[in-house]
Length: 328
Ligand code: ASP
Image (cartoon, rainbow, N blue to C red; front, side, top):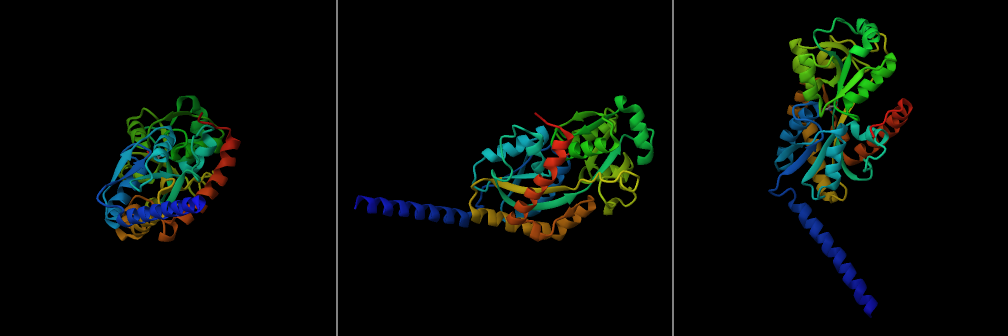
């Protein structure tokens, strides 16, 4: 009898939990804002994608989404904060390709991108361009490569920390030209760009979302698009492959995650709002203007992101292991 009572009590508890989650999910997002942690500095490329997205997504979700910039360690500090956040749908993470490279770069990462998060969906793909300070003598990528080889000890390459997109692109570039430069890490490429423009550092691989304005104004020397085809918004910048260096290709994808255990109905609401946002003409136009591309709505889903993140981890882990670079 006692056993039956215990079983009934357990069944009631489970169903009460279901009711609580169901009621919570129904009311979500409610009046409380959602915090989107962006693991890089304000004003940079990841921040720009995030601000454009959250402005539109707030409307589709029916809640204010506020951004919290938490830069450092290539995005891993911000990601860790979200792992530890309350899983009630009021904290999300917007991160980029670094989510797939961190497990190989950090031996003591402290979280598993696939297991410690709920996937919401992908957001946008952003190309990278290798740029330099205006006073650098070479005008073309073809001239830049021998110039770097001859002056490597005097030249510096900025990045947004180990595990950032700029770091990854820089790694591929240095490995392709078989020359190492002095690398200078920042908390994001926004502060790095200030120093490139000021001449304190010489070169950087950056996302077009950060440098579109400077490229249009001719404030930087653009050397090469680091992808297989020219960037639609910057057709005059040749690719590295066109200029004799094939294989240096990095597409910076961005996605949204929530802490593990965020209730599925809440994730569904977040993902539905994300799908509407990436299909929103205003968001698509803004991304195109910055040289980026909003993903099609079917990629802004948990399943698609899970498969894609897994494939990206499998793609980058051997590349990074082969390069023998570690952040810790
Ligand atoms: N996403 C940039 C990078 O990884 C950093 C940033 O957003 O500032 O290079």
